[in-house]
Length: 307
Image (cartoon, rainbow, N blue to C red; front, side, top):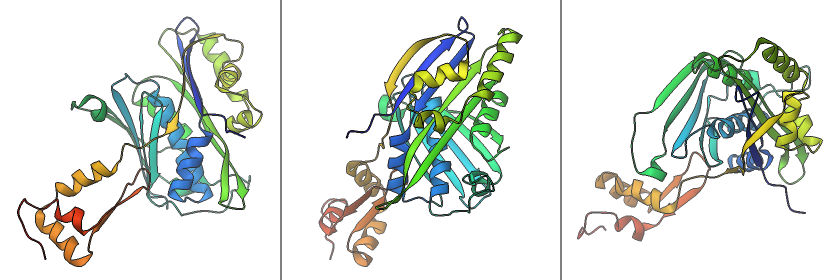
């Protein structure tokens, strides 16, 4: 049976005074967890951050990308996620195998592996799409929760001055072949703009607080539209965009070759002497690229003989 595809819905409500996004990210979080061979707790932390990247990416211009960087004092060390405006996201955790026992409430101790530190959000031109460089915008806030959703909401409210509510979740189940699999992952983002009525704010806050856990809604079979309606309560919304989202990396063998070609020739000679080739691993997707002696020699200055 074919898996349902991950999807995102972006909408507006209350005559444009409320912006909202919801996404199902189960497959992409599962793929990232599999690629990086993460522990269950890291899967929850990385999956929440990947979902946050998808949500923020949907708010970008077509030629932009966003990077979320968590520099953590906890054992995970850090998380880096990059997303664009077209539903593509990739990311990794610095220490993917660290784990902690479940909390007293039988939840993953994401707060424990994150600890304190800083949250950075970088918005910049997507060079691979435009070929242009532009000065990026970078905002930062201290990590105030470690649960990631609250930290992203704090960033949006404090650094970008847009009051925001964020919900992120990952639910995993044991799996005989892979130790565990991601059964549900997703999130939603609701933002209000200056001039929104006080009663609307109160009603939205109440409906968001009353909403079930995001993973519970997904496991019930709810899609992004139903999740938005649950979060917004009685307020109707107008859909602006609906699209697929996916784990996708920009790495390739050709790009890895270009990185090697940019190295000092002496470094290439050392690889030939000591290793008889080269291996490069992409941090974002864990893909490995191997180059044998012939391929490395071809990158040396023209006409140079290597023995």
